[in-house]
Image 1 (spheres, rainbow, N blue to C red):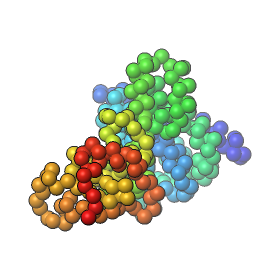
Image 2 (image 1 turned 180 degrees about the vertical axis):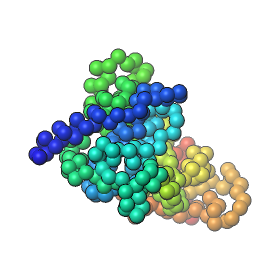
Image 3 (image 1 turned 90 degrees about the vertical axis):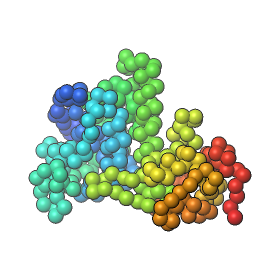
Image 4 (image 1 turned 60 degrees about the vertical axis):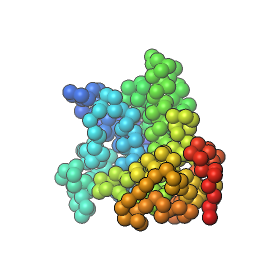
Length: 310
């Protein structure tokens, strides 16, 4: 089958996902299957997907970030393992356990073997664009659609969507803000390989959850700036300390602290003071670096321009 015909066939399959209907707190169509497929399309933009794909931290990060965009109508926690397992029944892939045997439950499904034809169309950028538009149109409300398109970097398509739907300007602005926030979370955390810039610590759970947050250098509430240069991947404690102004960063990416602002006790190797004057710790594979302009503004806000490296 030609790529064109294969693409058309797999686009049609995307309209027949048969998601469950929400009940109780949840309303509308269950978002699990389309969100996983959108996450997979997103991942295919950044890397050549292997034929056998693990339930990775990068995939989980995208699934959860996009899932936050539908939380108003689907407030219960979304579990990636469900669509990761159940989409096998519709021919997208085969589900395997940790021993590469056929998985029998969502809990035992740790990897998937993509259908070869589906694998080939995923490598086509035009298919990925069309697939995103099909999925967002078929399974999400207009505000969710705008937020998802914004999060996936399809702002021109988001603008078209605004004009075609009866959505208030306030709802549009809110959706776009949520979409940019999701994009920031994915770009900063995945771009830094889930590694805390202060400590160099990286921890991923068995189901792909990460220990780090996407922290804004200049507070979002003041700037609404979701550029990746305004971001750092930080563990939750390091993030809180940074927002409190207990430490900051010099232009040459060394840690500076203000010891007059805090007292700490416990194991000394965990002290914030032990990081003073040390360089940030980036994963060796990451190329993202924070912007010097945003770092200077953070230092100015918290009074660190009085401090210099010894």
